[in-house]
Structure formats: structure tokens, C-alpha cells
Amino acid sequence: MRENATSSSARPPVVRLDRVARVYRSGAIEVPAVRDISLDIPGGVFGVIAGPSGSGKTTLLNMIGCIDKPDSGRVEVQGQDVGLLADDALSDFRARHIGFVFQSFNLIPVLSAFENVEYPLLLIGVPAAERRRRTLEILDAVGLSAQAGRRPDELSGGQKQRVAIARALVKEPALVLADEPTANLDSVTGAAIVATMRRMQAACATSFVFSTHDARLLAEADLTFSIADGMLVP
Image (cartoon, rainbow, N blue to C red; front, side, top):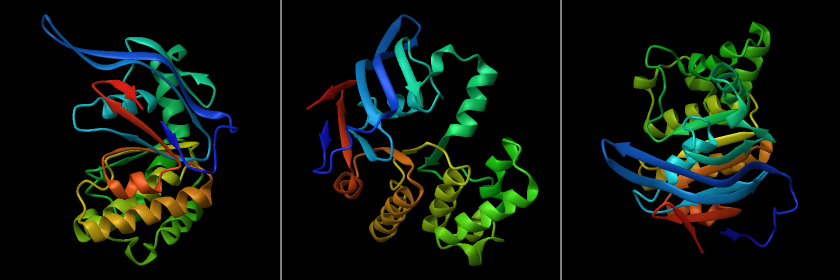
């Protein structure tokens, strides 16, 4: 684990993992993906989980994001032990408190940029006028006001990723998780996306946690956790 000179350790954790493990099974074969990991991620940080392909970083991110469940150990987000939540309550918790940015964007192709960003607010029952205000505000913040009416196939890769960032932030979550968010972008566009995410993290006081091996994200991180063979390494 590495922290920059401005320590975040005094802040209460937005994520706490206690001896978390995850094993994938195929018939009689067991493949440990995450092994006995404990860590705290303070609130309001730009954090990175770094490691090579197959190291377990995506599995770890999915457990933090309540997409996957550990076989053992405890995951807490915003002080909530998510393992105690029933499926419906877990889905509602994830929808309200966690935003996601994916390397493949995961935009809905038949919806405009505006509608893609607005969609999470529909899911949690935000009134129409408030949805419109927040959607337009966040699209402006990521520099996409002029593209609000365009569908994903009318946008560049960098524009699609900025829509995904806006969609993740529009519900004002405590935590945004991003799995290799620059992997499908060229170097110039990737650098611009890193700068956008850094700016939005500071503006929204939201914790960003990435899985990556991108040197640009590693250089920007407030806090870095390195993982290899499913274990944290110095």
C-alpha cells in the first residue's frame, strides 16, 4: 500500500475489508482469486488497486461494489456490512451509494447521452425536475452539454467514457468504482479522462477506486494497493 504525502488515514473509511477471500470453482478445480485481504479505503480519495492481469483486482473491485460476494470475510461500505443485506436491499444500497465506470462504457445504445446519465436517477425515484437539473449539471461539468442529445454510436470513445463518468456521479454516490477505465482509449484520450476523473473527484468529494495497471492513474493516486496472486503486496 502506498499513500501520497498528504495522508488520508485520518478520514473514516468508505470501504473496509476484513480478511476477504474469494474462490472460483469449475467442477473439482478451485482457483483462489482473492486471498485473505484486509484493507481500509478512506473517504474522499483517488485510490488505485494495481496489479497485472489475473492478479485478482477485478474480483476485489466487484466485491467492494456488491456485484460479487466473498466466500469468507466481511465487506463494509459506508459503515454497512453488505453481507447482512438481503438481495433486494443490497441492490437498493448499491444503486444509491455506488457508481460504476466500465472500460467498455456499458452505455445503453438506444438512449441519448442525457438519457444514459439520467437513468440511475430514474431507478432511485428522483423527481423529473430534479433529474433534469442534475443530469444537465453533470453533463456540463464533464464538457458534454453539446452532445446531450447524441446516442453512444454518435460519440467518440473519450466522449462515451465521460458520459459513463457523469452517469456514475449523477446520483452523488459516496463511492465510484472504475475497472480499467482507460484500457480502451488512446494515450491522449486516456490522459484527458484521467484528468476529468481527478477533477470530478475533487469537485464532488467522492471516493474513486480504480483497478488498473495504467501508469497515468498510478501517478495520480492518493492511495495505491498492489495485488498479486490474490494477495496484497508491499
